[in-house]
Image 1 (tube, rainbow, N blue to C red):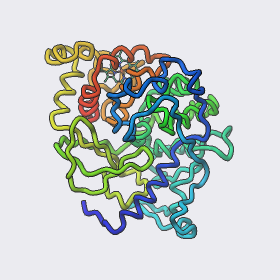
Image 2 (cartoon, rainbow, N blue to C red):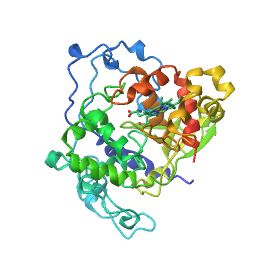
Image 3 (cartoon, rainbow, N blue to C red):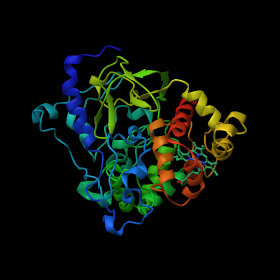
Length: 372
Ligand code: HEC
């Protein structure tokens, strides 16, 4: 992979603008004094000392009373780049007949669609957002991408069962599904969308994403080292292709392609560097009846495959896990553990996650993400 370093500062600036726009302008969270003691954001920072910050795209632990900075809407011009330049339709991706301008990639209300022949027509809510939000509409596909592959800072939604998708919307709507990091801006965004979306729109989005493949699959690489990373919004970007940084007890999940060519090509997916040995450790922890798993973590031993299916492709009502973003998987496990993620069927997961250490979650996610 050849990186054109001269172009990189410009691209990082550009990506920074792009990732900053992933979120909502209002936070329905109650003020700190009225939060329940179960709310992780009401807890002292040391209660979250084992938080896998890398999975949240943050570098410092949250403090009581922290809130998210509201995110924008509409077309997000980058003030550092000449406005006319941003309007020129100069972006292309291999194999697509379409051209887009830079501003098109930061338009919350109109998702770019490089390959319209590769999927069924997008429902209006997926391409443009929920009608009730009017000028503050946010298209589902801006964050989850047209193919549902998502990004590490949000979620892969391709292939999720319709019922599960709708249950999550309900859990967001009721405010029961939140983040252990109250600063994570796209969670209040998601709660705002779940409160605005109509039941017809929700069903249309659920059915559309249930039929998507999310391709390409995530590529998992076991390694002692990973490239250096920089944060843009809550998304990590590799600043070099050289693996110069020691990788211990964390996962480094980045775009699987040349960073300076970022244009949301749906044929480019993500890859994850995972600690050496983590896949085997995760397999032992996740596999039913494994004697080594029994020894390491009895609670996890019979667990994942028992409910999520032998191949972890999901078994009603438990969703599919195999091949999904490891950052997302760890974030969810940790949110179940702290109680930030609650909801209709979360009580089935909370006791499982509460018995896992952050390191075990990391190993399990490395293994599960590597599965076909
Ligand atoms: C007793 C059944 C059960 C067991 C055992 C179980 N799960 Fe789950 N899991 C569920 C259900 C049900 C949900 C959906 C919860 C909801 O609707 O919010 C879920 C959700 C999840 C999610 C969230 C997925 C998403 O799309 O957000 C993850 C991650 C997860 N489980 C991982 C695991 C792992 C890893 C194990 C083993 C250590 C495991 N689960 C064991 C039932 C189970």
